[in-house]
Image (cartoon, rainbow over all chains, first blue to last red; front, side):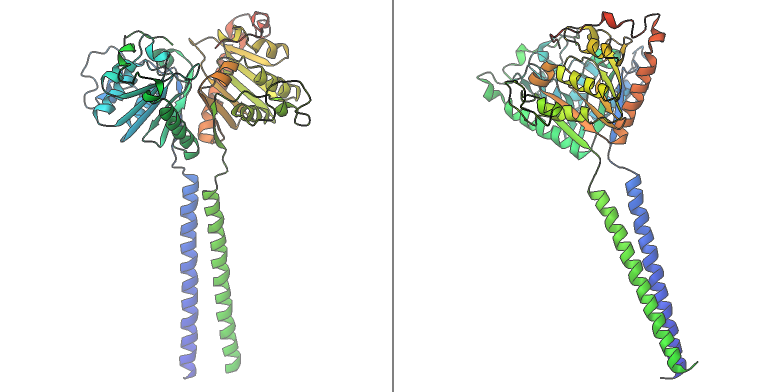
Length: 236
Length: 236
């Protein structure tokens, strides 16, 4: 090999090594940048809603195409805390599990019935005593064919949580009543953080299994539907 | 320069480049590994407690050195949900902000008074009506010199949350009563996730400012202390 060829080979080797170094460096920088971006832009849903919510018409949630086509005298199209709560409930695409001390709110009941008509699997656990108070929507849910079980083992089944598609948790101080939404200082957390969601999934499973109608004597859940109130008043 | 010197120089250059490549590669791998570990091992506290809690003596929480030195007939040393809740409250090292619909639980009151004696800054917001129910601990807190403000603007100030050192949130369905702890199905979330904690910090600040005694007429918070109940019964 001539000395010219040796020199050329040496130069090419250096060029290759430098090129390799540059490629390794740029790939490392890009990977680091992507990881840092992932660290800095959390994708897990974590949101808090506070109440009382401004009193507004919720028609735009149920009929986005024609929100003003009815004669409701309330402000229209407002994105209130309650509107956001309704949207979270309506975001269910496969299942909705409700575990509620009190369920009297007619807009929330309308949302649940709407999901039921869309073939979303719905299970409802309610407090035994509060499921029969004036204004309870539990009777309407049962009549529509939604599976409802009541919990009578505790002084109060005081939970107020919903699980959307088994991975989105809605929970807080807010009972699902009109008074709580419009008149009380309340909070609702919405989260997809697995370490918060999964314990609630297990708690729902436990309560659902523990309150199977066959375990509560001869009165099945469907047979008890007639005992449940469905009038329009409301009591906290 | 001789051809031997040129060859040596070329070899050394190659060695340097390879060495540089190895160092760059190892640094990149280490950085990636550290970042991945940070992604996969979440350090943010996220925990859920469920109630009712097993009935047990809480003396080991307050007197870890001599938990059995008193004559409480209940099981001792049990790590129940309530024991864990007490520990979270007692973990405050600088401040404790309470925003509670009802505060009748004597163990929780004892924990708050203990923190007050340790010079932890404590602020308490309570519902105007529920602060005077039978069994309310609000009077005891005031008499100890703890700053309490009542919220009367809403039908109910229905929150049940605590902020420990402004960065740890304790919230859920659980009112701070004995009945809730021992007899109800309840939940408490404990989290340090900033996107959940910060809205509650702002809500507390807002309610605290809105309910400054001077804004509520001539009756200051200290002057109203005599109106507040402090008997030992309990009402949910």
